[in-house]
Image (cartoon, rainbow, N blue to C red; front, top):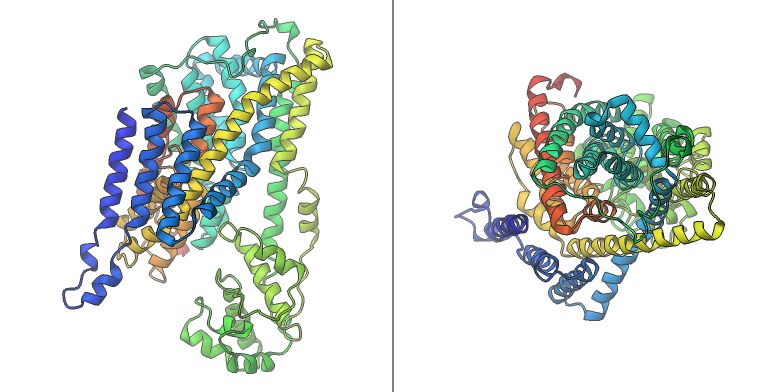
Length: 625
């Protein structure tokens, strides 16, 4: 019970912190100013209720994790309804939608991963890979190989997918050695988690670098430099944790251990064995690379020739009304007063035209550019509609620029030339979209694993079907629990805890190391509050961009980005899908994960922060700004 109590104490401290108006914000001369800076405590109250509920049901009452998460999600959702004056029925629908959204994003992936894992174990493919690796590294260094594999694979591939692919190797390695199962699981988690939050093109760090204005290449370089020592410390901690609380491997299915170990000549070849692991990584990696290259072209970015009439554009800016597309341009929060005045003057030479286009490109990255009333009556194109329907929080800058430019072209076709999006690079990316889709790639990998099992073990199609059905039964439980965790996290997000955190930290005058600590702290609190590292990174980076403004620190902004990334690892518990993936795919109990996975990510987070602070002092690189 020690870890849950620590979590409760931490959350209670957070509640007290947010419930009390910051002393620095109080102004004895102005009661109104004090009221304006107070922080709404209700989201924090709901957060604490949710934490107490889920931990009490799972740890205290030993209730099934799926039921505990769904019930806790409903409790929080009803609390949100009471606060906002919504009826209970709509809040139940919100829970269902949160569950459905999470299940839709992970359902097929987990099902295919369950098939891959069982087939690789039963066919001997996992054993072949492990034997080959041990021959190279030796048994004592096998965990280093698992950590390195997770470290590299998680750069182009989501952490969940990497863990699914490597868990069969950890299980097979335990069968060979008879020990260190927890160490093997934590080694995979160490490598996969740290690069997932620090190294593009994984979506989280990619968006953080864009929000904070950091070059992707610089983010990849410094992110990797920060990740390496953190991964080493994480691996050392894994060894310590395995000695303190060794865990035996448990069967994930009733018949998982039915096959006897195969002799060397009965195992599939190394290349056949590697196919279910390598195939999805290659496909997803190729798609990610193609998309990254296409995004770098930024085809929606305006050039001088794209504005067809600069004189008419200046007239439009001078006559712009608030609730019009032109009004959305001239009133954009990305423009200063001088910028607005510049856009109202007709550009007559190349220099002034370049300046106008530069300012417009800033506007095209405005997250609040679209307003329904302003574009009422404008016939929107398919591109505009599709982008507006997409997830705005996770939208990449290149896609946001395309959406906003398309909106301008729809509103003023006589002023803006239609952009050509489908370059050869983009066409290649589109052609790879199906093959690089994680669901499809893992489906192909599952087929490869199934065929390997059938022909290596010479089993009938009926027996193969029974094995697949067994794996899907265990995978179905994992899907239910992970999706319920997603619903719980979504309901915590509905409390508007992110806005409360933003209000609390608004107006911070931090600088130097304090600024890095603030970036780390904001991301950490966001992670504890709503469970998603990606959301914590995106929201945290946005808040830091607003806090810093034009007052750049005495070091490269990449260190603020890595501070946000490492902070987003902190405090992973039952509202995090990664927690449930580690727990259920590894065959651990919730308590075992709270004593291994949660502290491991704390170690990675704090080590990453320390390395970030050290690098910002030794290599500030301010001249690069």
